[in-house]
Image (cartoon, rainbow, N blue to C red; front, side, top):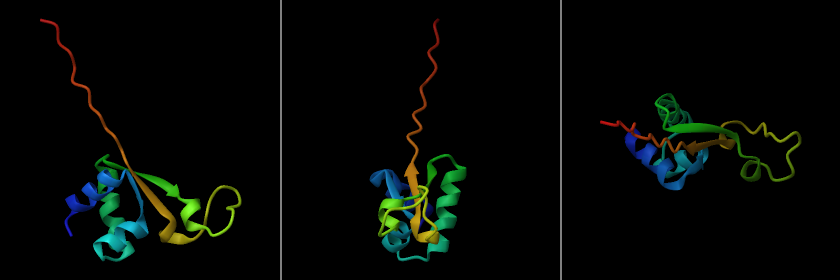
Length: 88
């Protein structure tokens, strides 16, 4: 597993849970979290918090879940950089 493969996986899906990444690459959740944290620092991925719809079997109280690493959710950051326009 390479860091670029995890980046590409999130980019293709637009979002994924920590458990999705770990299962897809057959790595531990801790290893997946380290890789995702790397891409967060690079500004390519953002942490989306707990994904209650997939993490909780019942209605979440207060809008958050406390199920641990399984519910952590990550999103691709569409960092479109516009090129500056120069008038000559």
